[in-house]
Length: 114
Image 1 (cartoon, helix red, strand yellow):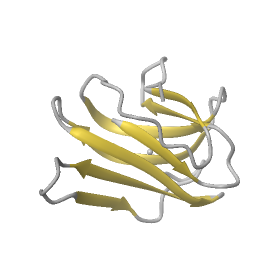
Image 2 (image 1 turned 90 degrees about the horizontal axis):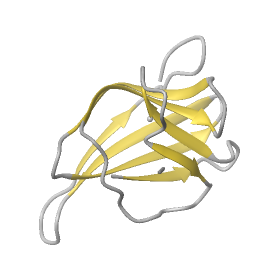
Image 3 (image 1 turned 90 degrees about the vertical axis):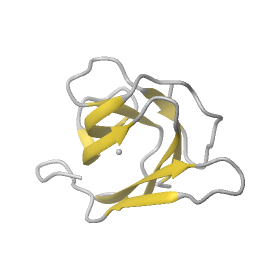
Image 4 (image 1 turned 135 degrees about the horizontal axis):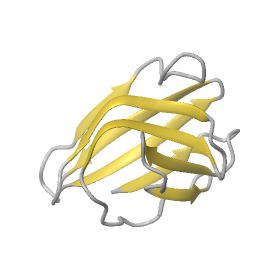
């Protein structure tokens, strides 16, 4: 999995699986696109937080990441309406599946580095 922060006004972000204390990815800066990191399979809500903070700025209510597959999670837009896009990446010559989370939720409502 990799995370791309395409949200120019949020600063560095952390990506969490709801209910876990440790970030899946931490300190992802704007316009950064590091390589893939192997992570444990995840099912459930993903939360985007400002680096080192507990408040959720965006979320994906139902995310599923299987073992052995490549994924990219992209945050885009500006606060308070960030959009989180989950892409299942494929090897060359194959299709790419993109799942957008429209109307990504903000704190008080609801809307995903190592």
